Image (cartoon, rainbow, N blue to C red):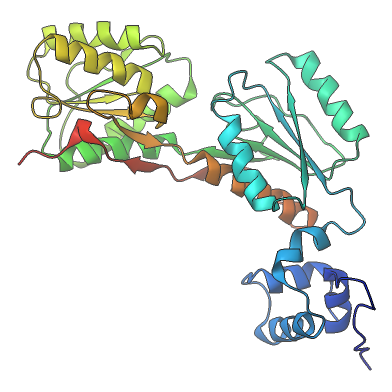
Length: 341
């Protein structure tokens, strides 16, 4: 016979209490309350009835999942500027629940020895999991086998036995081209940053995918150099001198796009009437202060952080995953690509 006592006077019900009352494991109770598909309907009903009887609410989930744990997660980064780690951290904190899980942020400053020092410190603190955030989407060395779950965010691990979450840059390049084509553009060029970066190469693949699907070809060769406004200005001047017919430019970053806008303005080309321009990263301080405001591809980093945090939870729930998961990106439309009338 199943016992039906409450959690006890003065004590808040935990997920363990719900699982015991429903006669299931803590992992199954967690899945049932979270609406996961792999739980049988009858089992889900039993768990939800037990949760209601014990006055257990889903917003207690993070705390109860951590029963017997420290309630801390490490976030280890090498992003010196915070451009990428801050939105990822915000997304992770959203998923963990305010005040329910403490996140320790450690900046390795791109130094492998410092990274090992921080890693040792996090493990000594007995963190329940670690999220490793890189500053670019190139594969990074794996930390190897650790006693806690590890999820790699933005920069994937070079070991497919690890779990990595990274933006789909190839899909982003294609999305940029599809948007320009929908705006009536057909003579499209591409100016990007350092080709040693996986992001630059993947975005070009996506640009070519989009053009090929529309029966179009890239105007000239893809132009690569550094991720800067200065390069954007110089590249645009060279491009338009060689190919004055260009009516759309996909840029590998918002910084490059800002430089392209400067040159177009200097040459008397109207944006977007003569040439439509789209950037990448949706760095709002740049995009919203451009003239005109810059359409851009957003890597959706907060959602990436939320996904990474959820993967830590599922690993704590004994659901192990591996390989690389590519997260969708999104288009943010502003004045630099308004469709022709």
